[in-house]
Length: 205
Image 1 (cartoon, rainbow, N blue to C red):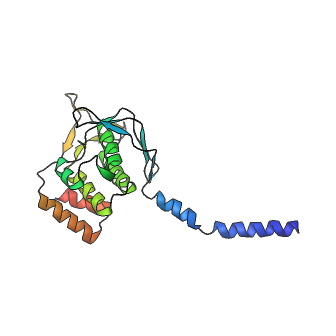
Image 2 (cartoon, rainbow, N blue to C red; image 1 turned 135 degrees about the vertical axis):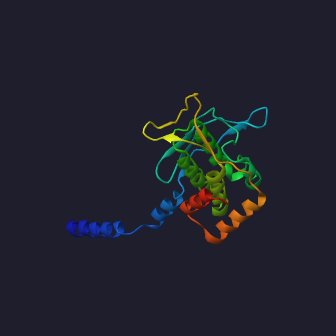
């Protein structure tokens, strides 16, 4: 009887091991865009333009990379092209806030190449509930108009110019509302991958 019971349990475990249970699938789906550890806690400074992080904000992206905005970080949304603020309603409003804080800090610290920082921003936006069209439009904006820098991968440090200033790759151009409309329409109609968005952003509007 005991042998039969053990054999039965082994068979059941083998069947279960070959399938994903509904709760396993749900857990895996919930981490499709990564996950945050703890809520975001901030306050505005007296000038109303800078936000201070009152507690550490931690985000793990879909690849398992942990991005941290330390307590006391000061952010002002400068890493997001200002021309797109009207589209998103401001970088620290609604569902954009946590992703914007992380992106600002990553652009200030520059411990990773800017394309990784921008991809983190996209995934963090999706994790926060931003729609695919909105998140992809912002991703295009960053790739096309963002404040980028050269990066020396082997030393994990930004390249420093002879004058001691970090060498930026500034790709900003004038952004017209019609340009945003064209990009949004293209994204809605084609649902492009991030790679396709990067190719279009590199080529032009």
